Length: 171
Length: 243
Image 1 (spheres, rainbow over the protein chains, first blue to last red):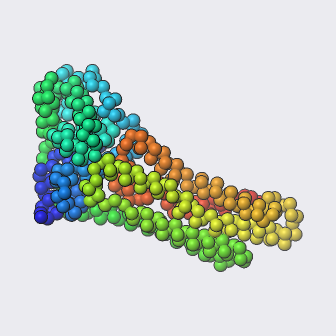
Image 2 (cartoon, chains in turn purple, red):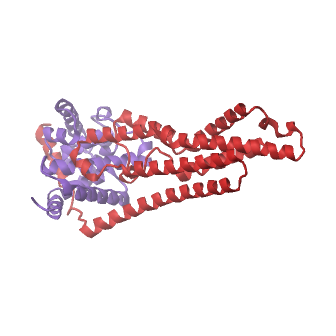
Image 3 (cartoon, each protein chain N blue to C red):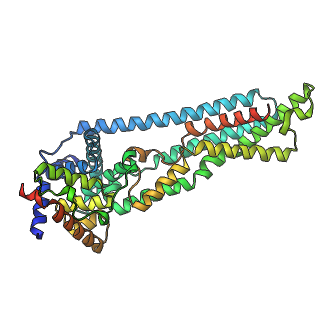
């Protein structure tokens, strides 16, 4: 069994970039984002002490990461005062975010981040896991949603991505 | 558009980061120590506040001449010690980071909501009611004492206004005042905000409590907010009532 330090090193190497994106998708303010990222790393580092391989390392760190991040959103007064959207309430096609007109890669990424930050934590988790390439059973394992629920929401997410962000791939 | 285009968007998303941020063990330990220091300071503040309340009422018990006032002070000291113990116990009962990995997001959110709900439901039993007997007796004893002193000074009975009715009525009135004062002092930091927060989060199925806040006893008012405020409020009411 690998030591806590070895496992943490593996996490940083294999999922470090995904954790960065996760923190940025939850917190727009750069300083707070850095704090959140450090909190996530700290929680993962502490949790690895008891990691026994009953689920994959990826599932484990996504659970810890999303739970810390969702708690961060819940504790943030500014975020609490904002009305967060369900994935069902997001317009599939939104003229304001038509990236055909401005197919800059960074702009598209920023818009995608902005859209994710508007979502409720449960939908945010799902969207982020989907974008990270986690399959439906994996998403279910991390979030605890039923396979049917995951499938329905993933379908909706795909529609949103197709209609809003197809320009991004052209950059 | 096909599924292929969605896959490309996912790839595009995954390429959006540069070198992953790294924290060495020292960074993380220092973060953890900072966090623990904050908790220790907060706990220390609570215990100092409790000590202050106990000290003040021990002094009152020593200087006040009547048995009723002394019993009231004794009960208040016991009540404060009990609340301090409960705060210590409940503030320590927090989920370790490891639990976040053992439970999926829905389970984690549910357990957090349940923990908060239980804490809020029980706030009357462990936080407010321990003060009631002591404060009621103390106020009642204070009214009696004021009345006796006033009468001994040769004033008319009517001068002390509503301090003169029968003993049960006075006790009831003291308790009512205490309830009002308790509700007032616990409202901003306690139940109402917590309940509202819980109900809104239940609707949006979001999780509760930042890692920092989770270690505090969310929804439960602190001793420094409650215990100090409540006797002050009660004393103000008492002095206003007795002229």
